[in-house]
Structure formats: structure tokens, C-alpha cells
Image (tube, rainbow, N blue to C red):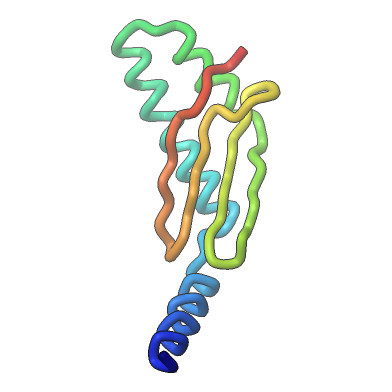
Length: 99
């Protein structure tokens, strides 16, 4: 039982020191927006193409949970891209469309 507790402490400490920063999360969100915008341009989706342009100027909201982090890049009142990160890895997904 003590070994399991020690392992959890080591994993939590590693997660704390490798938590992605706001700049890293913002870059990942911008990269996701770029790929979504390029895909929309190939499919002639005017709303998706304009959504990428609208969201580029907006600042995102970064939340740090010590061992993980969350970043949302808004377009208006709702988030357009949402990213989660831990252990220097980030995963972003498009969650909404701009109004």
C-alpha cells in the first residue's frame, strides 16, 4: 500500500512540473483553428472559414488544475476550441461555431 501511495506522489509531482503553460495551450488551440479553417476552405464552408478568422484575435481562458490544464478560445460568448493538457501533451477539439 505504501508503494502505491509513493507511486501516486511521484506521478502527481511529474504532472505538476510538466503541466502545459498558457502559451503552449494557446499555440495548440491556434493550430487546431488553422486545421479546421483549412478544412472548411477546402469544403467551401464560409461559416467555418470566418469562424477561424474571428477567433484568432480573441484571447482564451486558461485554467490550471496543478496536474492538468484547460484552455478555451472563445468566439463571442461560447468557446470555439477547447484544449486539455497534462504531462506536456495537449489535446484540442472544436466545440462550437461562432455566432
